Length: 289
Image 1 (cartoon, rainbow, N blue to C red):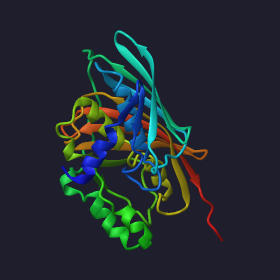
Image 2: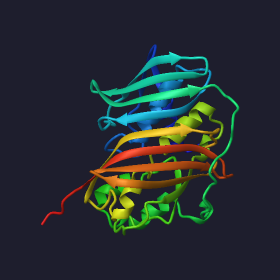
Image 3: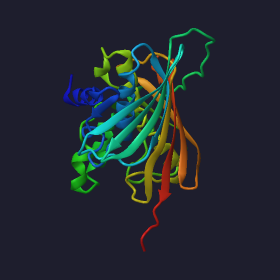
Image 4: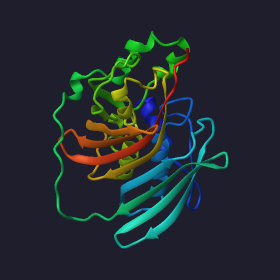
């Protein structure tokens, strides 16, 4: 197992402080300036799972309230809202510096059989034919100020292969619909709960960017302020994140300084395993004369 994979797995192995009270590491995720949103969601889900021994999460709904500070730990307080015959409900509050940075509701369901159908997976180029995120970023690194190079090129645990990636520094308006393949090979051997946490971590990647694509802007162009406002996720089938998964994303609406984004996640064999939705702040920054 490589170091970045071990770091992520350690991030999600949160520490129990007291009954229903847990602590997670703030640093070590996707960025060094603030805590990556998917990390807080995944740690919150890991905290909820510590109080639900007998069933798996089927949905979660989270609100991002304040940016996370990577220099200090995050405290997670779990409220045992309900333990029912078929469903269990938990509320998780993430706290730093005495203030909430995220609150999340999660619901857990016993395994049941029922009606079955799904939309088919879109047909796109496979991951083997696409460049890795690391290789793509190396193409643009020399065009960025040197102070950004270390963070921009830092090793990351999730292998991402974008289908038709945009030009990071000079994006052109294009369709909001976009695709990527992702996996973490070192997820092999993780139990079902950790698989959920790993996919929750990865599900925040590129989703908000769908709102920006039709407008020819992104995080590197300097003319838009972005922040995730909320994040919802539904788990449909068992996760094997050591295998390739296709993340299909779109943004049916952007307006009022916000963008609405949707995602579906398919295993490489075509099975739909999860769906996501997220609204984010997409506030234009006026150009300076």
